[in-house]
Amino acid sequence: MKNKILITGATGGLGSKVINLLKEKTESENLAVLVRDEKNELAKQYANDGIEVKIGNYADFDSLKNAFKGIDVLYFVSGGDDSQRSKLHKNVVDAAKEMGVKHIIYTSAVWKDESDASPLATLVDSHIQTENCIKASGITYTILRHNLYAEVIEMMIGDKSQLLKTKTIYLPTANGLTSFVPKKDLAEAAVNILLNPYTFANKILEFNGSEQIKFSEIAEKISEIVNEPVQYISPEVTEFEATMNKYRLPNHVIEILSTFSLAIADGEFDQKSIDLETVLGRKTTSLTDFLKETYN
Image 1 (cartoon, rainbow, N blue to C red):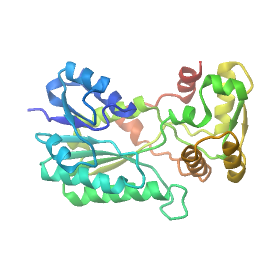
Image 2 (image 1 turned 90 degrees about the vertical axis):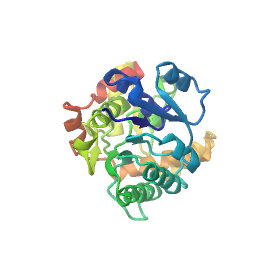
Image 3 (image 1 turned 30 degrees about the vertical axis):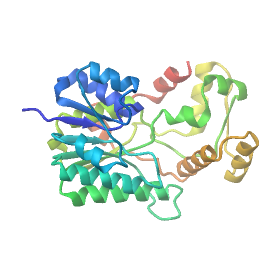
C-alpha cells in the first residue's frame, strides 16, 4: 500500500512544481493538496486531475486537523509571515501529530550566523524553532534547508525590460557569493524524497546550488545574454535605502531587499554542501542556462 502524500503551499511556485512532478510518478489517488481557496484555478485543476483538494490554512488548527486525516507523508512548505511563522508552524506540527502523520518533510533555510546580529535573525530563529518543534514531536522527519531560489535574482534586480532601462544591478551585496537553486531542482529532489521518505528518515539536508556566484558575475552573464552592458554597483546600505525611497519603493520591499542583500554580503548563502546533488543524482541547473531562460 502506497503512502498518502499531502502537499502544502500547493498553489505556490514550489508546491505546484512538486505536485506536477508527483503526478508523473504516482497515481492521483495517492495525492492531496492543502489550499486556502477552492476557487483558485490551480485548485480546480488539481480536482480535475483527481487529486484530493483540502481547504485550510496554518492559522486554523481545526482546518489542519481535517486536512491531515488519512495522510501519511506531509510536505510542509514554510509560511511567509516572519513575525508569526513559529506560531503558525507549531499549529501544523501539532495537527500532524494529533492526526497520526508518519513523516514530515519541511522546507527550512540555510544559515551560518544564528546570532541576533545576523540580518536573517528573525528568519533563522523561526526556522530553528520549527525544526526543534518537529524533532520534539516524535514524528519521523526530513528537514530540507534551502538556499535562495534562483528566481529571487529577477525579484532583486528586475526583469529584462527593467534592466535594459537602467543597465545597472544596484544592490548592497558587495562580493558575497550565493549558491542559488532553481525551484524546479528543489521540486525534483523533494519528489525523490516524498516517494522514498523513510530512506531519508530523521535527516537534515542542505540544498545548495552546484555553483557559487556574485552579483558582479550575474551582471556579466546578463550582459552577454541581452547583448548590452549591464554594470554592477554595490552601495552602502544607507545609500541604497535612500535611493530606493527616492524611487518610492514600498518600505517592506526595501526592507526585504536590504535584508537579503546584507545576508549575501555576509556570506550567509555561500554554502557548498552537495546534499542536493546527491538526491538529484546530478549537478543542479547551470545558472547560465537559468539566466538565459529568464532574460533571453
